[in-house]
Length: 481
Image (tube, rainbow, N blue to C red; front, side):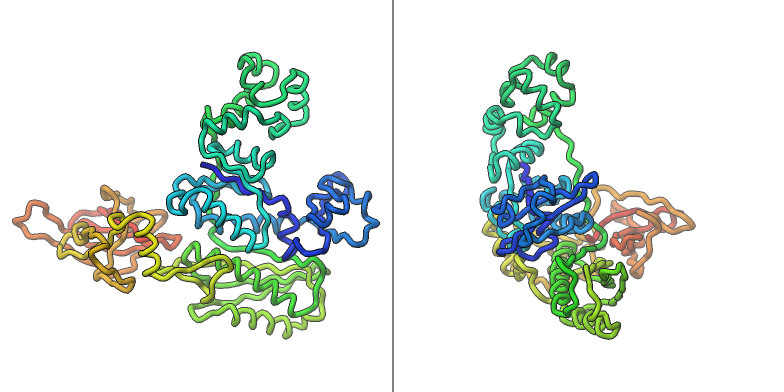
């Protein structure tokens, strides 16, 4: 089940805090030496300004605020929205500069159905300053097409999808003008007419790609969707509608960027090691400020450091056009969920441990929740057993010693060795003392191993062991996160 979120005012929303105010806004872009309108809010549209218009046709209207479209800002804003969408599904894709495509079939039970899920999505997006349109369909291309032709439509059954598509005009297809003209010349008015034509003739008159596109649209052929890969760093830019010189405006922009950062860090369960601010003036002069972070860092202290830097460098008298925040974060092992800066992100509710367990019980049932109980065993793979949580009160502060990974591989994976050092996604770095396991000689399963906790080049912790007495015999046995 695919959800397509479309942001018709995206090029304005990333530059303005609230496009619902009384000010008419229009974003413009230059195409072949002609400045045209990319998007216009409702106040601008009431004045007759529509996307695709030339600026020369209304530039005399002094009430309309024109914003130069910034595709770089749109790119990072859409990346931040992808981080936000990870709370609903791990499968998503970016569609151009203005849309997100999410596969949510596996999330429906968790969010009590598609209606409840869409209500929460739309409410949170509005709280973030976006006004989305959406469509839900069993195929990704149908969700994209129907969102622009019939916004806010929800179709969950493939049979219903075929009925709706059959009555949809060919004008809604995302094809070229010439292809639409060819369909009109053939007397084809809707997609149902296309489906009734002989496939061989349709391929000859149009193309094989067009027929394949129809099959994907109706769900008769699998469709490839390039999935989004989460970023390994955070970067976002706040562009001021006008050049500013007030500290208050810079502080407001920094607060917005830090709210985006809070969401990114919360999703990754990580903390920043360093923050880099970039202040750009109207004369293209750039100033940079680097701030090191630790557990004691707060949003207020970071803002204070930024303001102090501006005053010290005497930037307050210069006009600033944008402020950018770039962050490198590092994984952090936590037994509970973390919210960096110690404050809630707008639209995000951080629940306590007891509330989390209670919510899971209500949604999934008492018998679906388990905890790992420590059992006495010399063999690490037998040192845990699964117990129902309904008969035990688990505390998030419970610690087991020695530390064990949550995930074990089905069969130990032999690792390659370079200069007697094991390799897994690069050379491993040993992080713990050896834990030697020796079984008794009369036992049927003889084990003689040294276990270690190691770290990969990207910081991921793994559990490995070495067979005693065997050269270059390293194996991967578990993964911690």
